[in-house]
Length: 206
Image (tube, rainbow, N blue to C red; front, side):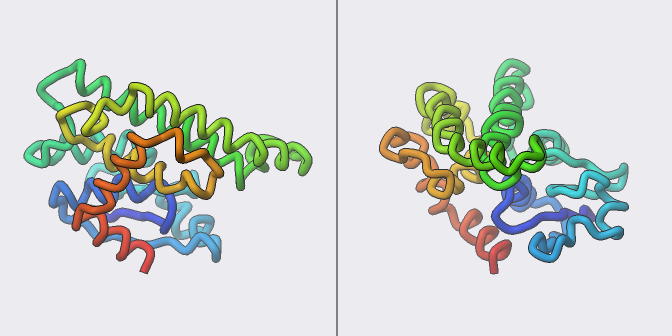
């Protein structure tokens, strides 16, 4: 039995969706960020980074969304969450997921977590003002080719679709011009219409 630690309205939604999709036996444990539960001694003993997601397996703890997504896809190959028989396509999936993690999510984090990068409150405000552009530019790259359609990898559904949905749910809050992202929005709408997605989001946010 796996134990999955998550928080509502965070990137941890992507792997949570993938766990449910794969039928992986797991217990989902919600952390209360408002009360800094992710900084509690109990959780830091599990994940010293003090962030989500974290997946406790029989071999140890996994962190970082791209790594957890690939673990789920490979541990439950019947889920077909990754093109495991095609090294090139698998690398493309990991490339996309890494871009969301290292570039898009970081640009989004500049809105509320500027203290990670600077000590000057004026610098935090400058980062906030940049978010609509920086996140918008990142999604323009996705809109204009990285999202191949109908799924991220084209005809093959993968973990990237759950991850893109997760990040795309933040677009309005980041002040991005949605009129420039019709393909991203169409993908998001189709994903949100999936019963599995609606159910997991309701449980996370309920």
